Image (tube, rainbow, N blue to C red):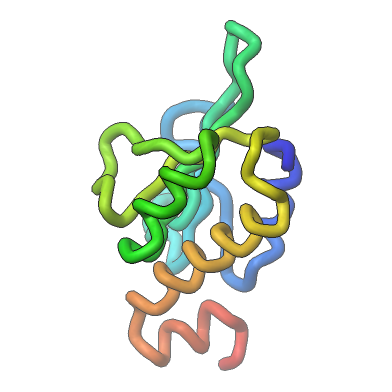
Length: 130
């Protein structure tokens, strides 16, 4: 899966919106209300920007702590993210040994994990049910 495919999937999830807090090349996808300055919300996916050394792009996702060790063992693409809780987040190199369908599942799972941190009413609003 390519960076553009990840961005398209993230943007297709109800209530998701992109932000670029560190510059145009680095994207984060968030849920929740934007403040008056366009910021706010909770991040469910970090999408790394372009690389100058020809390395593949990488993303970071929130994951089930029970499966994080297995993901690290099974896939070379799955590593520990910098600056995030390594029990709850994974870094994934794109266009690698992790199958696209499994990556899609991990993205949706990260979205659902962050969505579940909101109140039931906020969840309905984010999903567009109210």
